[in-house]
Image 1 (cartoon, rainbow, N blue to C red):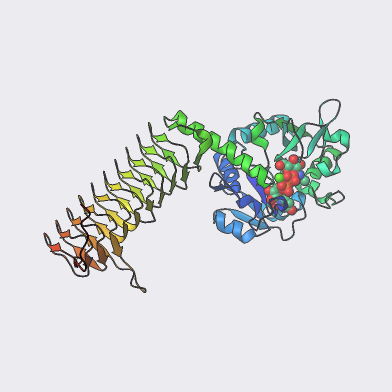
Image 2 (image 1 turned 30 degrees about the vertical axis):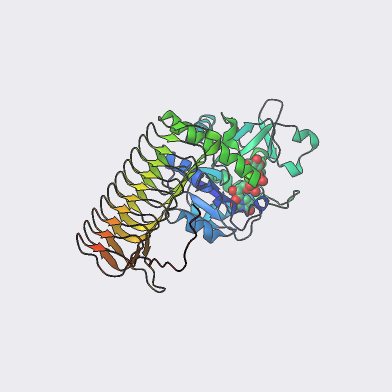
Length: 454
Ligand code: UD1
Ligand code: CA
């Protein structure tokens, strides 16, 4: 498709969200709703649309980054007023402009293609996208004449009871010839129930001026859904999640209970992996083949190798090697890199630590800021004492070491290859390769005689 211009309206406050965050930055399956709209435009070849920002605009700009063109709408005086702010960017352009609202995240690239094809074949000045909804409430209604031609779009607050009965709604996506757009915007007046400059009135202005306005009805009901409230957001989240899980299942993932499994867009899961209920996969999480995840697992930006098992645990920004077993009740904080066939068990917390193959960290241990070799056994209650109140220090435990239960490793410290620490030892100095460090055993004191009951 040849390069065309597109304007995305994202300046609104989103009053109905009742939020400090601009509406278009509210997330659906982990991504701002606006990101979906931008992806869809990119898929039809519009890589640098003009984004109209306004309310908390700097937040929107920071979230989207460079590579887009921004127009600022200082005061949110309506969708027609918003598009006026984009006009300087369209100086000298005379082709078709796509206008999309930033709160319509389900739009598909195919639909934009259909809209543009229809727009061209009809030789229309503007083509609007519409949808037939069982419940049209909240949307602008598309009014047609007896011949079926679009007559105007009426917003719900301005509509008569009969007009509200109309089920065809304005989906919030238009193809408009740039010259016609410029001319029609001059005519806008905020003479309506909301006191705003409506882009929808520009359509009426075009018709009044003798222009052709065409319409395309979207294929699927979901697609035209606009997100205005938290309830809309929750429904959108559920619909998007269902679609994401369907895609995973089609690619060979078992999802035991899709109603109780939560995934972000962009998460990847390998074949024959089983997702148990209460699994939450977030961010850029990637899971290999043949894993068992959950019940009750929250993975954020995690990378999990083939055949791993994670039960009732939290893994954040960490790597879990092939065949490793995590949980129940383990917490991998950022910066953990587990090798292959590692075991991390009950109430173990790990942070910024590299753990070698086949090492075991069970029962209430804390391993932070550490490099642990392969085949190490970390006894119950072991703690790397990494913080002296000012600075974090590193612990090194080499291959094959045996760390007795309740060992306190006062970092910086090293335990050499194959070394052993006794239960309860407090290790302050390096234990050399093959060395043994034993703590102070409790003294046994017999103070008083015990009556022998027998
Ligand atoms: C709008 C349409 C309605 C349509 C519906 C589709 C108008 C007047 N109404 O209604 O016909 O059925 O979308 O979802 O166009 N925005 C700005 N600046 C503003 C106001 C809004 O940039 O001053 C942006 C918002 O950020 C949002 C989009 O425009 O992304 C739509 O605004 P919104 O207030 O949600 O319009 P609706 O009432 O939903
Ligand atoms: Ca809306």
